Image (cartoon, rainbow over all chains, first blue to last red; front, side, top):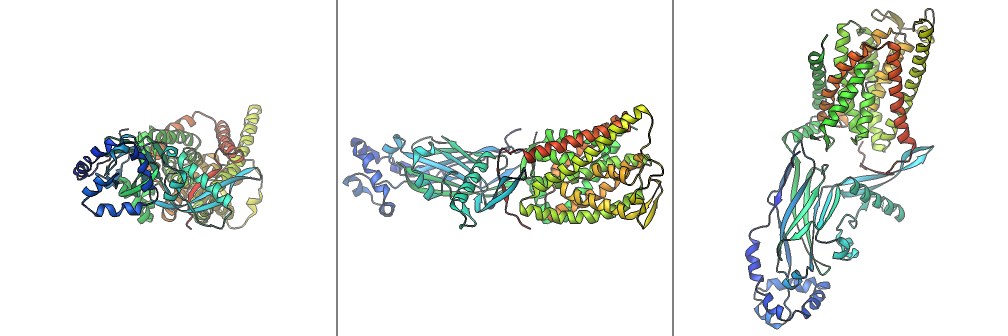
Length: 306
Length: 306
């Protein structure tokens, strides 16, 4: 019953010195705290572009003295391992990801104006959603809708509830969150109402089976720069290449995204069985039969008392 | 005791599966049937995908039939010749069944078809046996009556290509024997059953094979039909989960020995009545699912590949 594994993803140690440099900057701001929060959202709302060139100019000294400092926040996550192995007694687990923010506005950080959403997205597959209807008294699959590239699993961890962090339109634009993710139907000509109905059903089924999970408050700031995200992995988490993505929000505006890859694979025996079943399927079948015959024969010898 | 199933790609409680196998094994030993008609629905109730439940059920049926057939071989209540003729038909029927299985799976109607077959066959076979055994029990109370009525000539006995089966004391056309084998092979492939619950009554009531030879012969031919089904399912659908099957086999083989012992304490009519009640109960349970509105109208499936 023990946890099969607990992969810990740690931040890159390199980041720490970088903060040390940004840390001193707040001192002058603290003197004039009032204009700061108001000024900040404005530049972020529209122009990510003007902010971008800023880091390229390394001498920020003159900038500082001119007025409200420009922060060029960035987010990083580091994985201590790039693969997780599922063993025979796997029954789901929690995954911890550590990450860091660079160049944050300490004023805003103190007011919890930064939000982080961490997602672990499973490999994408086409999915058929079927609906049962009553036909001659029986409940039978009738209508169906096929969706392309649906992530098999989708675990989300956030600092705060979704509705408190940003506008739904923002999530939709980013295709972020189980409720806002874009699910592409194969036949786009189908009735919009039908597509909507099946999209909702798809999300609902995925959530019921635990493959899509959401942990509000799962991301916690350990310091203004450092956070820890806990993600829930279901017992039926799919095998394959997963993508860990972290999204940084400031005052409800999306700032930056980063991602890292994580392979989830079966352990030695399970992997060999799965591989054998798919690559040497005929021999696998013969082996299964032989196993059954031997088990039946041995069972007879062991248990028979006549 | 959580166990990860490499093919079903999910974890299950190993103890539950062992107990499930043992309970079904006990009943199969008691009644001389493979128990596939119980194990497959049980696995489906336990959320194993139906395609995997069917193929894995066929695999575990081999083990329980093997252990049962060995017992009958020792008691010389096994008609090899009849078994081989049934088998010839069985392989043919099973091949067709597997093609139909893959086709229904791609269509999204596999679950429906499996349930329908179960309801129709279990319902009718169980119902007939129930009526017959109650009648026999009632008559045996008033006076002894043999099942095999002398001088009664069925239309089956007028068919050409007659063959003599010495152990069964039978002289009958091979056409109905092969047809019976084919029909049961077809069902075996689609339902994941050995077909014992149809084979036993069919041999008794249609071909008038003596009851003591029926069980051993049926188990003997089921070994081969189920083995063929398992190999073909493994090769074409990759749906045999050998870990799940092995757990079921261990429980099943152990349970079967105790079941067989318990069976010796009961009379033939009583056994048939109990079997009939159980078969009808499974049929009603499946019919209930088919006719009562399900809790979830929507289901997800992989994109069908033929």
